Length: 315
Ligand code: NAP
Image (cartoon, rainbow, N blue to C red; front, side, top):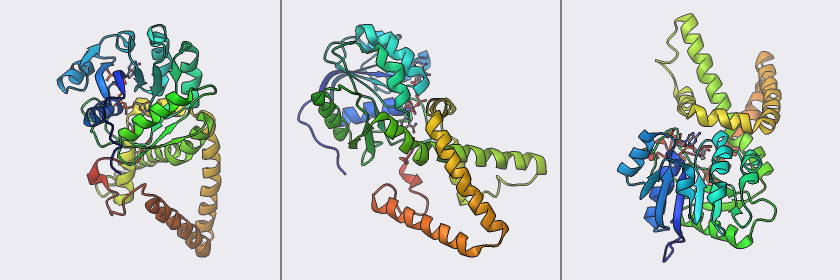
């Protein structure tokens, strides 16, 4: 789906607070679409700040988040979820009346809880989450097409201004995304099963295999088959980001983990009792789900899971 074209920048000054995979991809996509007059940024370390200038991701980079957010028309928090509350507290006092404050965090209710209290009156706070990413991180990992054809979920809070929501929706469409609106709680429940649980399982499978290799001196990793390789790719994701996801979406993940464990026990039982009929039925049902995912345009049918394209459904 081609990005929605706009005739002129939507925002004068855009501040990226955090310039890693998502922040740098936002910069590339904004530049591609001519969506911002000026892009400024803040990152925690001097190394990331200097890379962001060298890669022309930002016109100016600042040592403090408040300097970057000062006078910005759109401020996007692009740091790990656990860091966003303190960042909102730091920038709250300088946020311009009428500005939009949003974020890209993979959990939404915790963002509302941690950032909401620091948003001054007259500033439009509209949390968001692009369902697009890769297992890479840092300022050089980003690319302009990351959001093309991917969903971005906006989770407005009660009282959010309709015109500001519409403007942010237009922004994400111009970045290439499809946009949907939902409550933060609904978002967290849906993502717990579609993204957070799969990551947890990948981390666990990879660590179990690595442990087996150590204790049995077997060659699990050398001869790893396709399924395991895909798990290792998912498990290569940033540990800070994923630690924060699980710490901040605890209830929904525990709920999904409970359901998953029950269903896994049913599979275990079918294997133990040689119940091929049950196994065949469950695997056939799952295959139908994959067809649905392809029909919804959420993945390609390529046998390598479309990995060559770089962009994968994550987070
Ligand atoms: P990333 O590549 O690791 O970049 C994180 C950025 O945040 C870096 O610029 C880092 O600065 C900065 N940062 C980290 N801790 C900070 C702190 N305490 N204070 C200020 N800045 C801090 O991460 P990312 O993949 O872009 O993820 C950013 C956000 O997007 C996360 O909330 C994540 O949940 C969400 N998200 C990620 C994906 C994905 O697939 N990766 C997809 C959708 C949404 P330094 O480099 O200087 O440390």
